[in-house]
Length: 335
Image (cartoon, rainbow, N blue to C red):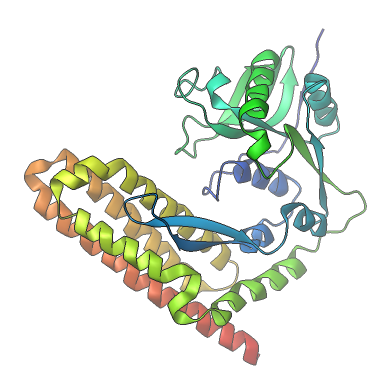
């Protein structure tokens, strides 16, 4: 009898993507411990950086004020990391028996339950393991890299080990994180101070808008340049057809950023939160219209103009949002 153990009341995080898939696993664990993800979201912010590696000449540069592990420590958590897979299954089971979820880094090329990538595409990924049953592990997994449809799935211990070793061989040397798999543990005796930490990091968040000059705020000039180029491409059917996948990837990244920002703002500023939600909606509509431009050639001009209008609306609202947050920051300083 190989036994069974499931960690109860651990739900996958499906509200938005943040930076990469590792955070969907991390946020699931933090929520499970009834702690706030807000400091982590605020600690890492996006700067729109000029790049010559793509059509729109932009990259999304995630910058952090504090190291991730140090911030976890401040929040009453710590990492137990494993750099080798020598005792892979027993290490994971021991953690699960302690009610501690495990995050396993994998190469999806070797992940048999991922039909989109299995023996088709190498892709670094993070899986949240929350139980074991016989010779299998219970994990949360999504159907593809762009989906937030995380749900329970079973994977054999052998397949998970193979996928993890694939990550170690292909990705770990170049990664900022030196672990093949790891646990985020709650420090015993640590008392929650979510409200105190949230207030501290909210001040840090709005302070960024006061410190940055208008013209350099988070690389907004580069963001505007990318949007201008997008508008030009949206008027050219042949160019749009050729570049549609790249452009949709850009829009997806912007939507992820705005949804994370909306989550931050809902904790302290209703009007800015509304603006962030409207920006996200405008970009979502622009993405739909971009797809229609390709699929409905007879209506290209109509859909193209509507997509350009949606992008313009998103940009105008973005500028209003920055002003709203600055006003909030000024009021906070005066209080």
